Image 1 (cartoon, helix red, strand yellow):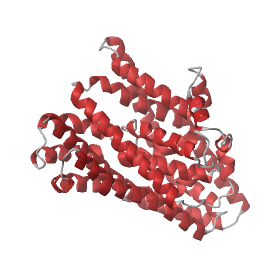
Image 2 (cartoon, helix red, strand yellow):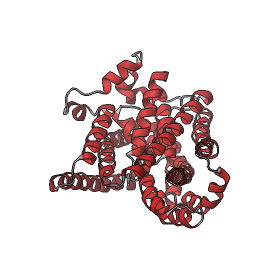
Image 3 (spheres, one colour):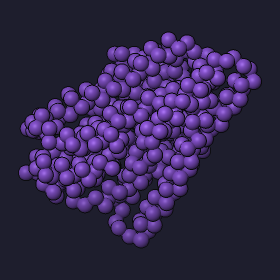
Image 4 (cartoon, helix red, strand yellow):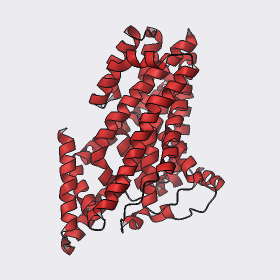
Length: 395
């Protein structure tokens, strides 16, 4: 709560500073915003690569294949569904652009080459040099490499060499998290700069309308996934959605207020076993995995927010672009385990990596606290559904 108040206060202060119309102050704010943009870009590549690598590398240690296989299938299906619902709502509601004059200054190459076909998009992300994607910060190629390396590590036989590589990656990730926490601690200053930059050039009414539609897409997607899509999955498996929801309500409510699937996990497991009647073997195996990789709300947030930011950066949102980013959002969400500020920071990293106008995310940040509550509740509900479906399949 304290952090939210500080962020909202920083947003208000920045907006006021931007409206003053002082040239020297605008230059200072532009300088600070540029510094934060560069810091985000610095952390973008290792954040994405290490998160995906370490998540997929642990697949080999998860034990018995049948339960894990079904867990993974249901996780990917529900996560793809969440991203697809977000994409459909985004096209239907069509949030407008923020009238930001500086947006194109940040988007760089993101607005170039937008007439290429979907096939061209796919070809462009397949690297022909293992070093080049790191040097260029090519996020799409790096996601592909990270997935391949992480999954290959999961298939290696257990040995000292494998343990050394995985421990090295986990150690790097811990170091990165420390740097990220430091950046987040200073983030109110960045919010002031981004807000000042925006308010110096925008109409408040247009901003409210645009952001309002964006929030409607994000929350609407979560509501549809929660009350329609996931119940349809349960019905397809022969389960009563109302029964499952009523039994898992304590865990879902705790997730809503804690905003942490991991913190809610003990309650989720206890509720699944003692109230819903899921076997302890399934609950204690599936739910920890789901807490790590089953991120329905995160996938939808990454997709919708990325489309919104890219649109404001001048990138036409063709169906080929949307389909590509559905895939990116799913892989990113699955690999999002343990990243501080979760989906928000990962989305910011993705946008920084492709040169999109991350200043737009400064406006979204204070709203993210509410979105995060809804997303976490949806994630725990999805975890519950997956564990119930796996238990049903195996009994």
